[in-house]
Image (cartoon, rainbow over all chains, first blue to last red; front, side, top):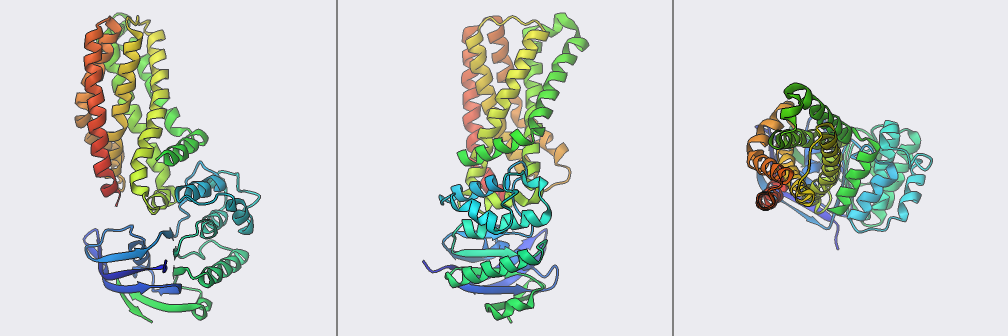
Length: 199
Length: 216
């Protein structure tokens, strides 16, 4: 199945404010970068692609499952990192045997059985990003994924993005930094005041 | 659905704030009841049953709000609803896990009521059926109201205001059914139990219809 998603004339209104304005966008295999200043609508664009927001106008299409990781780790407190990832993998009907290896590769091996609220922000971010390797879905939507990561984590994330891209997965990253990703990107989208244009 | 329930119960086991708050609340109310109204009136089947169900209703609100507060930390709720079928599983899973938690709270509250108020139970099996069905009918509506008020700062005040008017028929049926079972009215207890079953079904259908849309 071809990985990707599209928005056609997508408009999002939240609290009587237009956050996305008639966005037309097709995301295919490879890396797509979404860039824009704070408050420009990057997160809303990703959430719209993930189907997490109702569109006031327009429509959204996606081929296959979507993995959306927001700028908070989206892990349930009270569960360990391993239990959180097990839940996500089981929910998608995947193989849980890959979880330990993925968490170790992301440097959370020692702490995978500690409740996530006892992990640092960086460790929680690493555990969340390990989902890219445990949930083999065709479309990845990552919102500011470099936040809270140290140098090792940043390197690991770059490698993971490169591998996902080589595997033919569609990867969409919203970030206002990391210009080095431009070389890897197949498409770049600039967003400002809710209006998206190809950059 | 079962996966969401297991996830919830695991989190509750490690961070039992919801259970502890609910059990403490019901225990304090049962203790206060006999002190405030006196042992004679507190032992009356109608009074004891009414107070038990009022306490259990507020305990449900406490436990449900704590469950969703946990979901809001670190946007865990968004991680769940972003999964395919996550919105539908959320409601079923929460109902299942909260029902289990509330059964535990009901057992503690019930035993405390029986012991502290020295209640006589004329029809124990009937009482169990009424309590089970009464507990089943509680979480769906409270979950709907918590979801509707999820992003509001005043949700601690709003949830009881939204939930209690809808729950009045259920509270009446549960109180009357419990009172009937305590005083030996088998027909009355079973009739109220049937009504509670109907409420549980109706409230669950309402929840299944509203929650996936409301969570969006």
